[in-house]
Structures are given as structure tokens and as C-alpha cells.
Image (cartoon, rainbow over all chains, first blue to last red; front, side, top):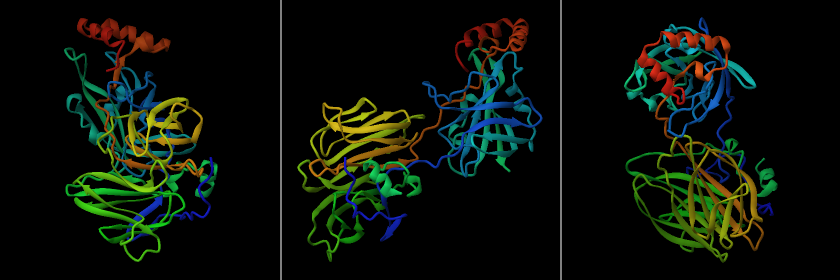
Length: 179
Length: 273
């Protein structure tokens, strides 16, 4: 294995020739954004750890087993990103509804949210709204959008328990803007 | 920095974040995206599109574009870097047709026997399933048929110049190497390839086996991701939590539940909602 010839003079940055961007064909890495590790919603019991999650085989977002952990959808923007929605989600407990995320539906607008990050300063958000969205019509392309103004989106279940569907009727969706 | 990456193994596939924003897939009704890869070693060239100088002093291992061009027929020609016009191309002229909304890469490369030639590839920019990554491998090198390995596993078998192979895989970093088909002794790599979720990564094996300058070039097309279908934010409580106090609370809750809800709890203890 030899290196290519040394006389290949590679530019230090994009060279624009005739208006066309040229760069070494060396692929790309997304800019590394620190992963979130904790979530604290002021005035609630939602003071939990955060782990990276992905996608389940049924194409649903993966959610941590523990009621004391939220999952961050690691393929989308992270908290602290410049653009797009950072999505966190966690379970409530069916029937009992005593676990922290059952309180998500009652978080007032203006509440302070602090997200701790791995090897980085925490980032803070202010709640802009909490809404119920029927699971049947959940607008996933809006919730998981990777561009546009940066937001923190926190999701769990709520609304009525639908016996015939063996599921809650709604997702509870909290949105927050960076401070 | 780039030179040191080359020195590591001529497969400087990482670190491009500092180089340039990757190409973002664009959806426009009337235009096509055309990228151009220079994969002929030791040759600085000019590239002409329909007789107009489009890329000046284009050097090996560089990727240009994407150019957004109106759909239609084009003639591509590659000349020596000091040519006055496109009348005496070293490669081409090549006639290509760009369809509206299409995404293409033209390569100037060596054929299997080592003669300069051009290839024209159509890039798959359809949506990638949520949580997955698309990997395409193109053989544009003066070399016999190869296998592509990720770690020890053969992921592409018996690929010949100018063929390509595409697969969908988990995102992440793979240790990629290229070996003569049926063997595992790398002629390129191993090199770390980072495959982003919701992106298409196109890897070109280029250069010449005989001249000892085989290398990898990569092209990334972003913005092909899909969204999760749902967010299953509920699960049965006590059955899946180890905290004694919580089990107690759950047991109390269980007693108070209606018969229907109890049945639901039993069914959902094994599956997230």
C-alpha cells in the first residue's frame, strides 16, 4: 500500500473553480455533537438519565426500558445543535401512571429544562408548549425534522387508554426553545 | 492534515468535516445533479461540459460538484490541464443524458487494463429506511475483480471494473478493505469508513494495482433519511422495573385496575406501546 504521489497538491479548503466546489473525494463526517446524558425539568420528578437510542425493527423509535431514563434519537440533531429538533422520549407506566414522565403533560409554558451533555456544558431550554397528538396521526416528519429552527422535543404517551387498541390514544409532545 | 491522512494509507476517508460540507441531495423538478470524480492517478486535467471549461486543473482524488444542470443531453470531455479547448480530449467526449431529478456521478478513471476512460453512474437517492445507511461500492481501478470486506466479512463479492454494488447496512464505522476476489489480503485498506444514518456513501476503488497506487475515494449524499413511524411511550410498570418501592406501587395500581385494563397490562408486559 503506497500513498498517492506527493506532487498532488491538495487545497487547504474548498477551491471554487468556475463556480463549482471541488474538494478531495474523501467522504464526510457529521460534525460531532456531544450526546445528552441527563434531563432535568424544573418543578417535576423528571430528573433522569439520557441514553442514545435508535430504531426498533418495527420502525418505531427505541425507548429505554427504565422509567427513569429518556432516550435521545441519536440519528437526529442533539440538544445544543444549531438546527433541527433534538428528540427525547420515555415511557410512562400503563395503568399506574406514577412514574416521572406522567408529569410531562402538566409542565407549564416557560419551565426551565436543563440537558446535561457528555464532556460539554449543559444546555438550557424554556418550554414553549405541551400538546396531545393522536398516535394515529402523529406528524413524525415534523417532530423528527433535522433542519429549521432548533428545538428540544420530549415525547411520552398520554390521553385515554384505548382497550381495543391496547394502547394509549395520544402522544404527549413537549416543545422547548434554547435559552 | 490531508497529506497525513493519505500517508496513513491513502484512504483518507475521514476528517472531511474539516474539508467541505458534503453534497446534500436536492429535489428539483427540472434539474439534475452531476458530480465529477477524478480518479486517474498522476494526471491533472481540465473538464469541459458541452465545450465549456467547467473544471480547471482538476487533480486526482478530487470530487467536484454537484453541478445543478437542466435536464438534457450533455457532452463531457477531459483534456490535459494546459489544453486551449476541448478539441483534443484525453478522455471522451462522452455523451450523457441527465434526467430531471436525477443524481449522477461521472468519473474519469482507469479501466481494468489501465487505460484512461470515463464512467457515468446513476446515484440512488431514494429514501433510506430509518436507522439505516446505504453503501455503494464502485470499481474504477486498474485491477482485477475484487471483494470488499467490512472487518472480516465479505460484503461485496467479485466486483469488476466498472461495476457497482449497493447494500443497506447499519450506520456506524466499518473497517473496510478491498482484496482480490476470493482472498482476504487487502490491496486497499483497511480504512475506517463512517456510514451516516440516512445517507448514501459511495466508495470508489481507484488507481492502479500495477503502479501500487490503489486508493479509496468517497462521496456522501446526505438528507435521504426517513423518520421513525411512531414513538411508543408507554409500557407496563411493575413487570419491568426492579425497584421494590415501584413494585409496591404497581401492585397497588394493579388491584385498582378494571378487568379490561388488567388484561391489557398482561398483554403489554412483553411489548412496548
